[in-house]
Image (tube, rainbow, N blue to C red; front, side, top):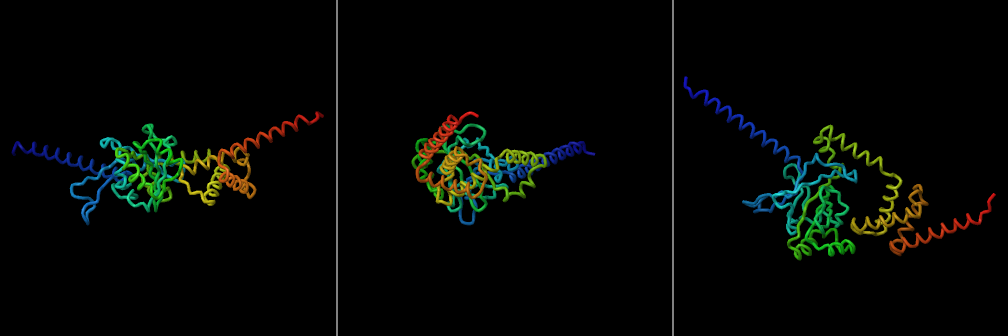
Length: 330
C-alpha cells in the first residue's frame, strides 16, 4: 500500500471541509442579504441589460428587516439604516435619482426616478430620534412612495441652513416635485451636498406575512409589548380630537406639507387646550367649536389667536375673582 494514501485522504478531507465551510458561509450571506432592506444605486446598461458591463451596484445603506420596530405611528414598521462606511457614509445629492429601495437581496420596492410615484417633505432634524446626532446644519426629508406607502427618511448636508429653513417656513416646494427641486435647484448650486439614508418604514398591513415569518417568537413578543405599551399610554380622547382637527383642516383646503401642517395643527391644539376643549366629549358641540377655531386661525393667524385667547382667559378669571369678592359670607 502506498504511504501517500493516508496523506491524500487527509488532504481530501480538509478540502471537503473547507468547501463545506465556504458553502455554508455563502448560504448565510445569501440568507442575510434576503432579509435586508437596502438603498442601492445602479445605472441602467444597454437595452436588455439590468446593468451596464463593468458597472457595480453600490449599496449606500442597509438594515436587517427583523431588527426594525413599530414606529411612533404603530401602523409603520421602521428599519433604521446603517451607512456603508467604505463610501464615506453618504451619497451625493446629485445621485439621488439613481437610488432604489430594495428588499430580498435586490428586489426594488421604490425608486427616486419616477416623480409620479412619490412625494417628499422637508423637516427639521431636531425631531428625529436616531442613534448619533445629525451633521451640523443638516435638514431632513421624508418621502412617501406609492403604491404601498413605503416611507424613506434622509438627511441632507451641504445646503445652507438659512435656505432650507426659509423653504420649510414658506412651504414653496411642491411635494410632487421634491427630488427635481433637490437636483435642479439645490445640487446644481451646491454640488458637494450629500445625502445620508436614515430609515425605511413599511405600512404593517402590507408586510404582515413577512413580520410573522421573519421575526422570532421572542422578538415578536417584545415588539408587540412595546407597541401595546405605547398604545396604552396614549390618550384616546386627545387622539380623537387631533384626528378630527387634522381632517377638518385638510377638508378646508390646507395642502401644506407635513412639516408646516403639523406645526399649524400644534398651534390650533394649543389654543383648543387653553380653551378647555380637550376635556370635552366628542360630539356636535365640540366639533362645531373646533371648526370655528380653525376658521379663526385661518383668518387671523396663530399669534393673534393666542393673544385673543389669553385676553379672554384673563377677563374670565378677573370676573370670577370679582364675583368671589362680592359674595357675602354666610
